[in-house]
Every structure is written in C-alpha cells, then in structure tokens.
Length: 405
Image (cartoon, rainbow, N blue to C red):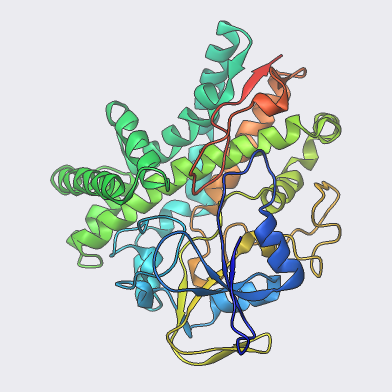
C-alpha cells in the first residue's frame, strides 16, 4: 500500500493494491479503513482518478439508497476500479437509476417471487441428490467444486432461464472470463459479446416458439414494448452469469467455513433447524468478493458522516466492511450461529438489492442440508493450506475443495 499525500490534503489518496487472499481472510486494507479511516479516498488497480471509499454500515446504507448517488452517471467514465472492464452491458439494470431501474426489474421480478422459487425447489433438490449420488459412487476423495458447487448453481439458473444442457458448458466458460480480473479487457469483452449474441438468438427463438421460462418472459416483455431487445439481453446476461458464478463460489465458501469450524458443523448436525439462521451468519461473515463492485457518482454535493462529497465525485461503498462494523455486530470477526438477528448487507441495499437473494438462499440451504445429512463424517481431504483459491477473482472462492467422508 502506498499513499499520495499533500500537506494541505486532509484525505490522502491511498492506493489499494488488491491481492489474492487465501481462505476467508478479510482484506487487511478494508479492515484498516473501517477501523481507522471509515471514509477515505482510494485508487484501485484499473481506471483513472480516485474515489471516495465508504465502509461503515449506516454510511453504506445511506450511499446505496440515496438517489443523489447515481449508477447511471458511471457510464462512459473510466473510473478507478478493480476489474479492467465493466461487468454488465451498458443497458443492464446494474447501471440504471429509478425510475428506469424499477421498469427493468419489473420485467423479471415475477420469476423471483417466493411462489416461483418454491416451484424450483424440488428440481433443485433432485439435481443436488443426483450429483451427490454420482460423487458417492465414485468414492472419496472428491472435489466438491467439480461434483456440486460448479454444476448445481449452473443447472438451477439455466433451468430458470431456459438455457439447454448442451449450451451450459459454454455459459460457464463465458462467465468465468467475464467475472475475473485476470483475462484482460479484450478477452472479457469478447466473452460478453459472445454471451450477448447467444441471448439475442435465444430471445428470438422464444418469440417464435414461446416457452415458460425467464427467456420467454424477457422475449414477451420486448414484444409488449416493456423492454428493448438490448435491455432484455443485458438482463439475461447479468442474471445468468452472476447467479451461476456467485452461488458457486459463495456456497463453496460456506462449506469451507463449516469444514474449518468443526464445532459449528457439529452443532448444525445436532440442530438442523438452526440452518436458516446459520446461513444468514455465513452470508455476513464470508468476504464473498474482492475489493468493491460498481461505484456511484454524486449528482450534487452530499454530506456523508460529516464529509462533503462533491457533485461529480466517485463513491465506492463496501458491503463487506459494513458486515464487520462493530457498531452493528458484536464480535464481528467471529462466526457465531447464535446471532438471532443478522441484518447483513451481503445482497446489497436500496434499489439495487439483489433480485436473486431468495434463490441464492434456497440453493445454499439445499447444498448445506444435503451434505450434512448424507455425509456425517465429511471433512477436508487435504490440509487447509493445500486448498487452492481462485486468482484474480472478482467473486472469491476456492478453485478446488477436496473432501472425504
């Protein structure tokens, strides 16, 4: 970490040298900012200029919900960021502000209601059981990333979207390139363009031959004039890529957390009714991404915790540090399944709260309950230090998760 500082400048610009971290280690730069400098200025490895960095729980909630901080204004600006490229397409809901954002979300909201997801549960459970049947037949040791965490989230979101089995391997390849900082801008743009063309063709097929899946809903929205084709494609790409990739990694992080906290695992086996509460605590505790995601731009001067952020300035906020704020969570660096109320911000806050939060919870519950029920002796097959972790990842997670039982 280096610092650029002026004698007249009360907020030095700190270079955030985001490094690959092992396991569930919390980024020391983030921990330091939360503790010593909760509102600071940072420069990340890509993009230009610097940005404000907001870390405390209440300040993060304020910045991510106040309409004076705009996502739309980010478009076209080479702001400082971790990835060499922007993840969503320009037309995606991630770059929109209300009321446009509300219109875009409405087009897919019915696919993520409790009733819709309840219909997905039996198929998701069957898929998990079949994957674990195959793993058990092959015998230990086994890599859970290969046998469960990779294929299950991809299958669930592909079933919801309407992506056929034959195309899912290509979807996984595109997603891995898009959601990494390691392939470079050109490769990432090629992957986005390939995925966008795929969904353009799929939506055209649904217009010709309607089906009851998310691609069909998006195609119908374009036919009714609620969405442009470009907007529908951008929504499909973002949901497909983020749902498969994020759940793959974070469900694996959850299992790794349990395998490295055996006392907590034993308690879940003894008290299976505790699982939903435990999942909320795991979501709070796990640092599921590297650095920060999409920024916001102040559209006018706004005061945040006594600091004036001027119109046009860039603001990054961290849900991860908010989840470790000691003003909100007692002993925040401990994994504690006795927390009955866990108001974490792992799915975001405000208008951009993750639409797929209930789907992610459903998949996590199926994965953890299935493993705990079927493999009472499940444990790591190698020492902790031999588990490999993904490099240059935007969403953190293990590269392999070798287990035995």
